[in-house]
Length: 285
Image 1 (tube, one colour):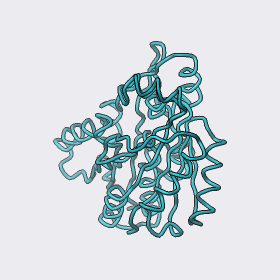
Image 2: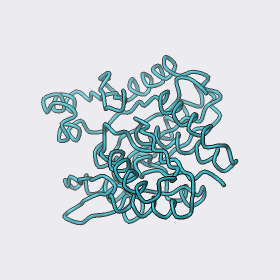
Image 3: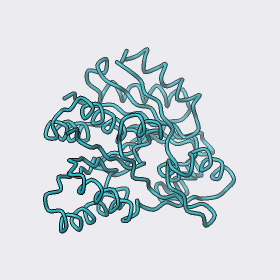
Image 4: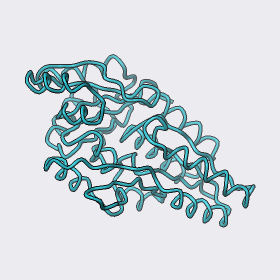
């Protein structure tokens, strides 16, 4: 029987991906003006970015225990083997909730064969791991081999991203308000990455052209065998810059593919509009 792949919405893959690749979606929650929405299912990213531009600060919450319970029970009843590929536990409580619910379901179904993996990845970095797992599952690769690939890619996934508005990161406590104020005055943009699942600023660059060039330099420093990779770009309502970045990546690395997606409603609620993120491996399996 084909291994069932599950993923939460923080992997920033479009709704069509789940439908076309038989991947089960676990949505995180987004809250705007007192209304609760399910990421991907009942809210689109543009709604979030429009709200942010109008001065509204969306809030998010982890996937609900009930959602996990319903999915896990159904799989256990059908005796399906599965892998849930989870958003970084350092950025959301979703992973911990899934582990708790799995323990409860196993009390009733002790032979339920589901493995939960904390990717320590975010956005499309997480998504690229899910994409490859779905491809392997469709080819009826064994669960053991899919898990090996998931864990390797999770460990070796590089995240580089920059935000349009430092003020938004300041509101979320990611940078100091003084830094945000000065950054806005001087056109300074941060480059951040994810280390061990946590958001970490690494550099500040003045000016868009220098920023994009520096991202390419960092990719050259950190990447390996880029011509054989699928490189990911996710953006927060900034497709023009994503396409510009794609052209630079194709010119500099000639990768197997550059995959572009929108940063979803849950992740985008924290990054703000205009964000651009790049994802690639520092080592191939």
